[in-house]
Every structure is written in structure tokens, then in C-alpha cells.
Image (cartoon, rainbow, N blue to C red):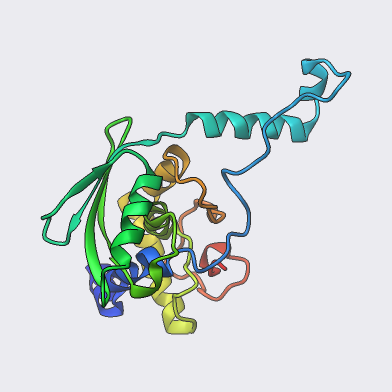
Length: 226
């Protein structure tokens, strides 16, 4: 109960809502988790010889991962009250539509989004469009990345610094570890296609003791992303 109270007091949900679209992805990823060159055996080598090299095995694994990511089959975008809905099949189509919408708004506007993936998993949320977002891209992928990485334990760059903020992050981190949100978020980041967005490195999945020092540099899950 304290965790829920702390979360409301800290305005986390409002911060996440603001993060979607324009603010999302303001930090840079430390390492690409889904990007990678395709595997190609070296000239004059047999496939078995080529696979004996660690880097080639990693490239083959990345290629397999990319080929098995699940893509969206239906995207629905509507006004915040669910009216005036339009449907798309790809992220690119939705980007073009949202870019056109930005050109018509005079102030920050809220839109309801729904994405149905090929395995019938449904993600729904709201995104905020700002007047300056006409040149933005990957609206939906960045919104999903922000939500799932937050639940998976990636401390976002917009999270305040300081001992009290560290304590609040610890409350959030433990809560999502214990209620299963972190497990679900990690699975979604591995399963669903958010390309070309580059994901942040996820912290090690491990329980955090209530007495943990939030500023301890040996605890990477408290380090903010960049």
C-alpha cells in the first residue's frame, strides 16, 4: 500500500504520460540489443568453421532474434475519447498519420492508441502530441519502449536525482519486481518488434533488499539511462 501511495505522491504516472512521444527516447541507449549485422560466413571457410568464431555465433543469434520478433497486424489511433478512429497496418503508416495530425494542432493533444500484434497480444495506451513533433518518428515504438523499460527497471533520464528520488526509485523497482510487471516487460521487449528503436541495456534481474543503499554504485539497476 505504501508503494502505491508513494507512486501517486511522486507523480510517476503523470511523468510516464508526459514521456510518451516527444520526451521518449531523449536519452541514448548504451548498447543495441536488437540491432546487428547479419551473419555471413567468411570467404574460404566452411559454415562450421565460421560458426566457431564467437562473434559469428553472436551475429547468427541476433539474426535469428530479429527474424522471430512479432510485428503489429493492426494499429488503431483515435481521439482521447475513442472517437474518430483510424486503422493502419504498419508503424510507418501510423507515423505518417500522426505527423499530419501534428501540423493541425495548436496545443498539446492526447490520442488513444491500440496495437494488435500477430500473436493477438494487445497494447493500448495514450500518447501526447506536441506542436513541435511534426518531424518526429517511431511514435508508438518509443511509447512502448518507455513503458516496458520503465517497468523492467531502466531508470529514465528524466527521473530526478537525490537521496529521496533514489528511495522512490527503489520503491518502484521492488514493487514491479514483486508484482510481475518487470517479468512481463522484459518478455515483451524480447518478443515484440520495436525497430528501428534502439533499446537500453536492461539491469540484472535480481531482488532488491528493502535496506539497499540507493546510491550504491555497485547496484547498476539504480543508475539512470542516458
